[in-house]
Amino acid sequence: NAGVTQTPKFQVLKTGQSMTLQCAQDMNHEYMSWYRQDPGMGLRLIHYSVGAGITDQGEVPNGYNVSRSTTEDFPLRLLSAAPSQTSVYFCASSPDIAPLGADLYEQYFGPGTRLTVT
Amino acid sequence: DAKTTQPNSMESNEEEPVHLPCNHSTISGTDYIHWYRQLPSQGPEYVIHGLTSNVNNRMASLAIAEDRKSSTLILHRATLRDAAVYYCILPDSNYQLIWGAGTKLIIKP
Image 1 (cartoon, rainbow over the protein chains, first blue to last red):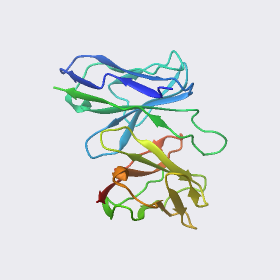
Image 2 (spheres, each protein chain N blue to C red):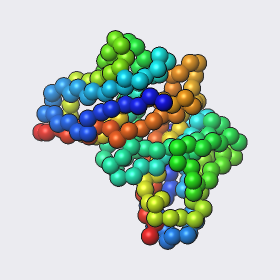
Image 3 (cartoon, chains in turn orange, red):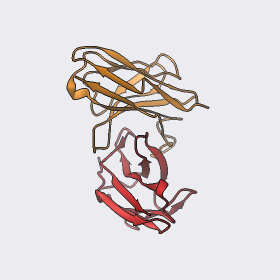
Image 4 (cartoon, helix red, strand yellow):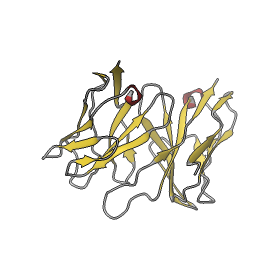
């Protein structure tokens, strides 16, 4: 298994440009999510999906769109890039959002995409 | 939603045990405590998680206080490859993990 893959590894955008960060997993996981990580900080949740056709907003969704047409893929779209979106973006997946009760499955993370907006 | 508090950084010598503390005084009765770590320039990876009892796996041990207001991640014999940022995390009401800034663990050879 390749696990969680992300492309591209690095990207430089000009303010106002749009782009899509790709994320794919081959583990048949229902749950997928996107995080951003700014220097010296922890991860902040952007959007997540509990299955194909279902998405929801996380802590910092503004300026980003997602869709989940297949179980495997969960692309993140930047509509009009701004310097404040300069960050490292991580995609993660897990078998499900939560089994019985409040326990959570282990999340598997991709290697990240380093995005710079000038 | 409950929050966690961790020291910004800790240092340890190679091949010695490391105890990484975490305070979570507002934890609810059903919140599991999760630990992830992030090696330099990599995505986070799962370490361990638990509810009430102490937990062990091949990577680490998790000691949870009886009142559940604090926990300690124990690396039994740290190596240089364990140098990373360690995150102690609780879920929010939507089962999403809430990440703080973590503890940067520095291992001295």
